[in-house]
Structure formats: C-alpha cells, structure tokens
Image 1 (cartoon, helix red, strand yellow):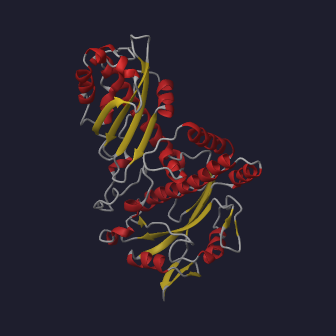
Image 2 (cartoon, helix red, strand yellow; image 1 turned 135 degrees about the vertical axis):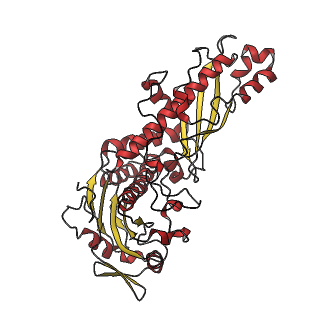
Image 3 (tube, one colour; image 1 turned 90 degrees about the vertical axis):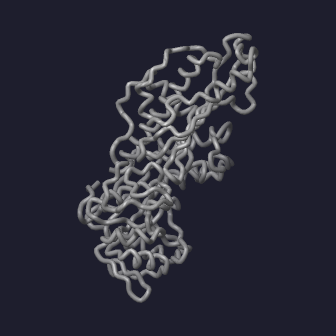
Length: 419
C-alpha cells in the first residue's frame, strides 16, 4: 500500500474491520439503543465471526488529476458527469480537486450468503448480508477520516462523499465512474468489480464515491451542509473537525481529539482478560450525534443470604465527548427489568426504601474525566449483593474500569483501521 502523499493514491485489503455494534444493529433495523439478545445476538455474533475469518475488505483511493465545473457538468480527468447536487456542493465550496474512492466487503460474504439462501437458512443469510453492508459503510467512513487527516495537514478540507444512485445523480453513470477509478496511477486495483446493466455493482457490497477537496475551508463555515463532520456518522473518528450540528471550529485549528485522552497503558485493579470478557458480554456503547457516549453494563450476581438468589442490576453511564476527555456526566444503577433477586437482599428486606435510595444516589467520580477511575481504589469487597456501600463502590469501580478498557480498545482499533 502506498503512503499518503501530496498526490494521493492508496489501496489495499484489511485484515479486519471494527464495525460498531450499534451501527450493525441500526442497519439490521433495530431501534436506537436496542441491545441484541437471544437468537438475534447469536446470529449477529456468528455473522461477525464468519466475516472476520473469511471476509476480505478492500479500499482504493486516488486524487483526480483535474476537476472542472462547467454548464452544470462535473468533468473529472476529462470525463463528464451530471449531478446537480454534487455540482452545487463542489461549486459552493470552491473545490479544486476530488478524490475518487472505491471500497468493498469482498465477494466472499456474497457467495456465502447465496449458499445460505439456497440451503434454506434465511436468518443466517439476512444477518451476513447486512453485516456486509455495515462493512461497506464502515470502510467509507474510515477512509473519509483518513482523507480528512491528509487534507488538514495540507491546509485543505474534504467534502462529504457522493455516489451514483444518490439523489440527483443517476445510477446509470456508475459504469463511467468505475472505469475512471480503475484508471489507476501506479497501484493495482485491489479487487475485480463490474457494473450490471441496471447500474448495480458486482460484488454488490461495493461502493464508488467522490470526495471533493477545497483549499478554502473557511468557505465551509457558513455552509453547514458542506461541513462533513456535522453530518458524518463515523462516531469514533480521530480527525473530527467539528461536533455534529454544532458551530464548527476553525478549520486550521489543531484538533485536540487526535491526542490520546485515555491511558492505553492503564494499571487496572482487575486483569485485562476479565475486562475484555465483560466488555464483550456485558457492555453496550453508543456514541451520540453530539459526541457524548452512553454506556450500559449488566451486572449479574447473587445475594449473600436466602440461599444465594441470583440478581441483576443495570448500570447506565453517560460520558461527555472524547474532546472533553470523557467526563462522567450521568450515572445510575438500578435493578434490571424483571429482576426479583434484589428483593431477597438482607438490607432490602430490612428497609427497602433506604437501600434503594442509597443505590440510586451514589454517583462516584461524577464530573471527573474517565481516567480518574485509574486512581480510584475503593476497598475490595467480593460480596455479590448491594447491601453495603463498600460493595457498591467496588462494583462501580469495576464498571468504570470496563468502560475505560472498552473505549481504549475502540480507539486503538480505529487508529489501525487504515494507516
């Protein structure tokens, strides 16, 4: 793979992609914040694991040699295209160039999906199909983030991507764009792609796109629709210029979000294997449009008396944005829906209102940045119940450490997605 340079061209395949669980759930059609359980969780995990073993995601990008706007037409390297929406975007931003991009989830998943359908396995077929779509979306967003970093270092800004089939760009122009993109400079195209008569691509989990480039990023400030960060759905991006739907920062400003805000070499109070398991099995993370992060953690334990009744509590934590250092803004711990085990705790039996009020009011490290949990060491208390404040503090520490660990892993994965 060629490194990013003044004249951009890069291509390659990826060993893995890190599709966010919340993005996969969204594409599956589940409502925002929904946590997959039961059969749906089993199928989602299966699709993710199958793709991790067999999928070959790829990407290609090169800067066009020329871009011209004339008479409503967009001419890229001498090839004309007709899209009033893209023309308007490039014109308003005073774009001087464009980057041509192709990404794909590979043919492997498509072939496996076809086999599953023929074997009368519609559930597996559906979940693998949708995961392929999630991979394409993820690749588009991550390569967009990489382009943002490359452009910012050169005093430029990258515009939102646009593709044939989007509003005001006829999908019939897909063959022309593919032929243009395949006319590479010095790097081989990573994967064979063809266009059907309908304009659809084969493999179908493939996307062609155009990213505009401008040397006048100040032009974007009054044009909120052209600020890619305000509409880009790639939550964990390391190169964000502005939060979603907020006033943008000056485009020449160095973004603090590029610097690590969480200690990747943290000395946790429990071993990392346990944290990794809890992060995978018990934790759900969702990044909001304003950059804040909402996390839920399911704790399962037993009472210390009454024959060790099983109980479950849900922890909800809202953090500020990464740029702010993930300050702890909201916290809550409450019995999981349908749980009855907590009613057998001895302190609950003695005074239910007092115990539940104490649990509800406890918000350790509230207002502090998430890194503060690394310095907080409440006395260890192995009790599975919530009767004693020391036991509750210990559980909060484990929850916050698990969140810290999961976010560190998420950021590390995004750093290595496309180098």
